[in-house]
Image (cartoon, rainbow, N blue to C red; front, side):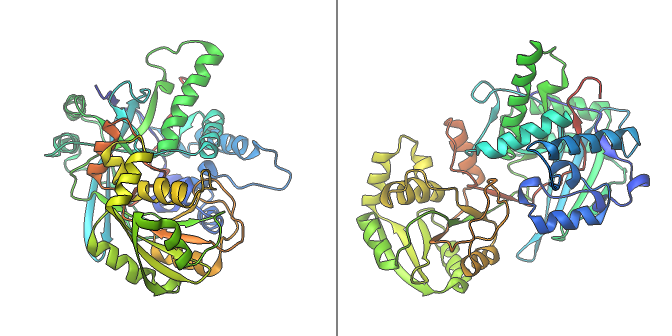
Length: 450
């Protein structure tokens, strides 16, 4: 069963630090250098100093992690971060707009007992990157805490678990923050024992599918292994047997999945005509526009078709957009080169990476692409090239033009469930569950003495 627990979270004392909006931050992997600097300047207690500490001249490889750990200890000693005195589930609402329509996504933050993938009720759905896992393990080792919740989804058609949790916050006033994107974040501490018991019981039979935070979950597993190697088996109630998790029903009305597009590095430059030749009879190719700014028009066409096997590719050498549609010959080729399920083979991101990049373009192990969340970023990347700084995979920009870009449909929630239950993983960044969850809402200590 999915073993969730209420816990006494560490939270900011707002009488010491000011408004919640001043001290929270987006997840570490979406913070660029400019935003990092802005968060540093916003408030001396902003969580960015913990989750993405700024490098300083003369730093060795682990200096940023040691500095983050010292800051974390200092904040606890000074009462900036204070442990709640009652175990709670932390109800978390996000109110946001997509294309002028307002949504509310409801979830709750808890501790989840760790399970190795494939041995229980917790399933991944995406591949991960080793650099990001090493980075998060160093942070966890030095700070001995979870700084940000992992985002998981579970199949609860009538949202009974969430309703049970929320029965414990009747007439309570939330803490609220509005982020730079205009998303409103509201948090309540649900401490009522009946609500906690009912929700825990109702959650038990459900599987949990990691939506966002695969690196952090695998880091939690690695951190526990590291402790066991150092000191032997952990007591069952040791905090490192758990990880900070936000649980949201798959059928919540605010469950929105947006696309993640790709700007490819390290591929040979080519024209649209050369691209079509390489794709052969696996795709029907149609040149539909010229120039980066046509991306919005292209995306509208792909959205209208609403077909995972329709993608758009941009060739930098001639600045042309080609709409590519998988043919029957392409489906047969995909099945012949992939050992995955039909559901996996049918995903747009799988077709892009396995069939187009690996097989037809012959790039067996290309550098990780730059993943972009919106079309403005895509257009800027095609216009300005691969800027400097760390990206979502931990890679540094090359400064060179991107030879190829791809616009691709996102996987759906149903795709996540089906492929996860097959024991498979989608290519990295197959989904973008919007909006992101904030770091700094609540911390989960991993040391028994915290």
